[in-house]
Image (cartoon, rainbow, N blue to C red; front, side):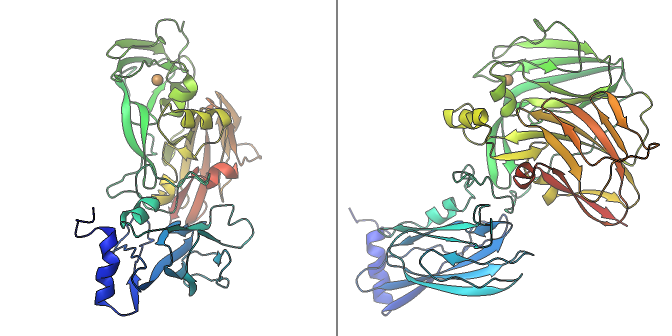
Length: 457
Ligand SMILES: [Cu+2]
């Protein structure tokens, strides 16, 4: 049974013959955003007189400890080289063990835990930081095992997104190589008065948060589906094709007024229909899958926006469209995932389908430029309070009406939208800097619903 040359049982003996009493195995886990754990993440066992010291580089930043979990073999002497890479100060305290002092940015301290024989937790002791997710689990295994568990536990393994503890995806991590954000720029309405589009309903794997892939149910291969834009009186002729072999889907355009029975019916796999409506009214409208249970169909990605310009809409330097929604990880339609939808405990809140994507890849404008932000709340359940730090809105248009125009003395700070509502705000960025835009419900902002407008001179 121990025939394999690299079987765990033989490794300590081999090491023991090569070295003396103490052998240091350096397992450097790269904590950088997006990098795979580099170097030999070796977990060697204590056996035949071999005591093992293992050194792990640990970084503190963005309300996270990286790695978030370290697997060690029982008896391993563990040494943590702790570095704070955050602008804020943090520390790290090990349960029944040593603690670092408060560390400023770039400061490091080594913690010697000695031989570890039982599971331990470590955390930042600053008020609220532990609850916000600054924890590290040290997990003891009885025997030497493979080196792959560290990698899997480090949040790089697709669905292993660190959500089991309720802290959501690691937003400080990196997106996969080649990742591109969903464009937030909204193109002007095409001149034609009839808009024809084929939309295919299908399953698509999407990187919904840094390093986290999720199977989404999509219109046109993306979540949100493609944005449509026109002017009052335009006709939209949407051909919906159900490419989903597993279930039925339909479509409901809030921008249209018509008897739902036929155009919003559920299409069985392989079926198609043409959904035609005339946009009689201006607004920022939601479209979504019309098949029950809609909580799941919308919650898994089947939504998008239709923008119908109000007459006389002025040109601005930049126009953006941000569709807000919740994000529920896990197998679509599984009991675990649907329970989160019913209980209102999403894993993240997002703009345009991906957590923190515009924090990683900011929107860029120049000082003094004027920008319009269209926002549609796809829900399925939560409202959004759209705010841009450092700006005042002089224009607010919500649900078909101007609530504020620049000729009036008042200003606005938030565009508040219930699920399925839409509108826009306008502002002029006063000077160069980094303006965060957020859902001002901070539970949502801190769990993905934030981005940056980078304003240059
Ligand atoms: Cu559907």
